Amino acid sequence: MASETWVVFEDFFPAMVERLGAKGFMDELCKGFRVLMDKEREVITFESLKKNSAVLGLKEICDDELMSMLREGDLDGDGSLSLMEFCVLMFRLSPELMDGSRRWLEEAVVNGL
Image 1: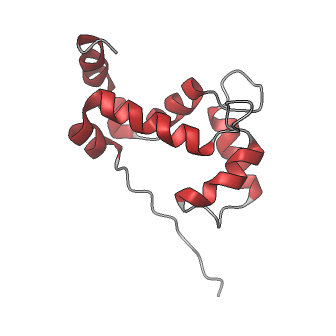
Image 2: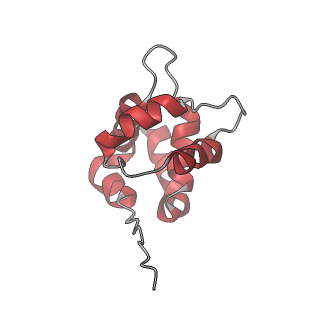
């Protein structure tokens, strides 16, 4: 019998927003982007994602999964993720953030982000 490995994704983003507020959460997303980005091109490429993903505990992930992640977020089809594409992807991966995004957007506007 083949063994199956399941990856359980626990969505910590809503708790982070509650704790940090909208601006603090966006600052943290920007920090995460900078960890993963290609420093010269200032976008996340396959190579930079592969190289830097171990920092986030993703060292066991295969190349196909990394490419799938890039394709999922690559809205303009250039093969990389800009900061905006990365943030949109992070929100899309968090159902609770999608549900609460209107409230957080309003908070961000009120606070002059």
